[in-house]
Length: 256
Image (tube, rainbow, N blue to C red; front, side):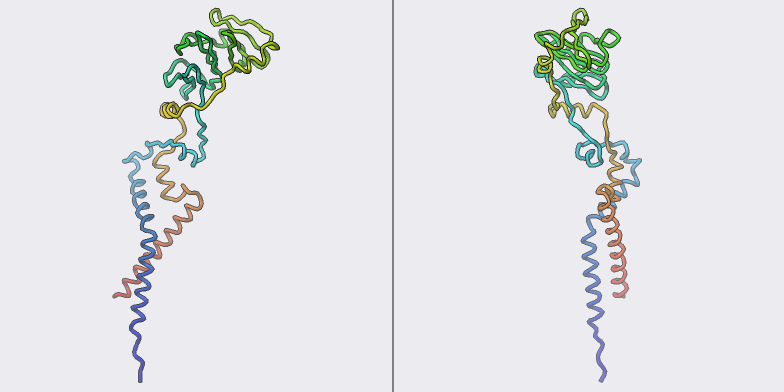
């Protein structure tokens, strides 16, 4: 007596094949949709002007290895004095005078404020209005490191000497540093991070590092955004797509 063929074996094979086909399809669905959209965007990048859209959020720049230190300034009479990327001295966001970075020090007297930049000493009124700039060509000592005030007297400190500065006559007078060293150190204003509102405004005004949207999409599309792990993940997705195509073809052939 002949054994009857087991008809359920091909059916079970088709079911198993379709089960894995569905699983692979569901596991790669979201990634494939993203790859399709990002690929479309990259193909039409010139028309979409993706290379002209620059992103400069702190976390993104940090991810790409750019250092984004917090901008610092000096607080005087509840106003912030700081330097921007365009070689200007700013007071609470308002451009006041030319000032080549770095802004080394800010000091105040009863009627004036003094800001020491790389290219000179800026004299301002107590309200932060520009008066004059005292530069090396005008007699500013070479290698002036900082400016400090004691009892409404202004002192310029270099590596080798300390001189008293007369804002009205622009005269320089030698002083005995031994009697003033500790007092001058205590009177110097320390720089501090700017308030968040000024940080944001300065970031929008100043030119700094940025990442184009085209670069970001390209790195996400290829997996390079996440380093070697991301590249291997995209390779795995590509392998799963190949398997998905094979299982789909096998199911179609068996059903015929």
